[in-house]
Amino acid sequence: MAAPPRPVSSCAAPIVWLLVTSALASAAGPARGRALGRRALASGAGAAALGAALGPAAQPARALIRGAKATGADAAALGVVGLFISMADCEVCIKDLPAACTGVLVGPQLVLSASHCLDLTEGLGGKLTKVVFGDSLLDPHALSVPVERFVLASQYGRQQNNDLMLIRLAAPAPSAWTVQPIAPPPGRAAGAVATDEFPQLDVLGFGDSVDDETRYSAGVLGRLRLQAISPVSSATFLTMVLDKQAGTCSGDSGAAAIVAGGRGADARRGVVGVLSSNSLPCTGSNGLFVSPAAFADFLRKGAADLNLPPPAGL
Image 1 (cartoon, rainbow, N blue to C red):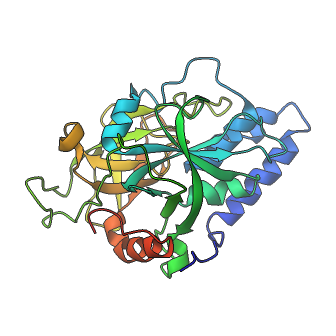
Image 2 (cartoon, one colour):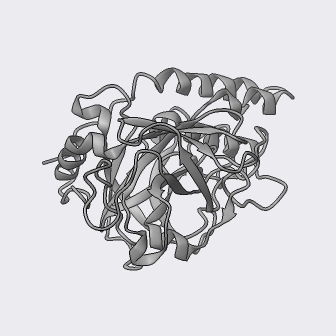
Image 3 (cartoon, one colour):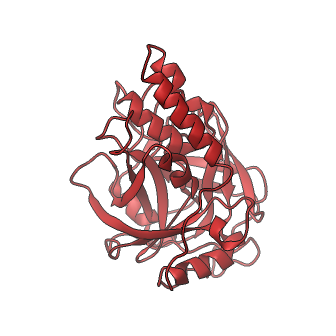
């Protein structure tokens, strides 16, 4: 069955308009950086698109505000992938810089991420072209797989807290990448690992490493540990950073929250949440995550519409 057409979500449409009008206005005058200020947004992909209009940072990116460096091996162990959203058709953007988002592999050919990554960039001509398997979206030699098609949770009836999408890859992911299962709610976890209601969470993302609205610093993988401060069994839950000088930011949207633990086989703890937005400024930010377990019906039906098995764990 063909995937249904993708509508633009009602909450993202006015933000897209704000991005377009601000970008066009900024092209005419010296207040360019201020008019394109990414802090006008609380969520990531549109801000990363604006970063592409502003240009690269003057210092090397580490991804995540004060995030620890993460490697391709880290990404493979946790199934983390980068969403490369081409801004080549954006009239006010630097053509060789993508809008960045993050995702997680939940099947050999299936990626889970945040739907606003597309809602916020389409108004600027952004197109999700490929998924990158590595530690940098900016490395032209990084392994990548083209995107075939995708579906959004908003297409399946539920209109609140529905910031999820499933992406079908044109070919299976590299074999080194671990497929992460969707974690069951606390109290129903299978096996030896059971999540409690307020766990510490590992997040890897390709977001900004510099908390500066005038710089583009997304695209390089970083790692951060968060603390859940509301129950992860809810449809959405909140987190705080353990290091108050750190935080999630533009480009980390879609990143998976995975209960903190080890690597490799021990890392198969499952996806507890998907990053939807964070407070501003990014330094010391609180994160808002959507629980994919609360959208099990969408995940099953969406995967079927993409002619793929449901995500692992369902």
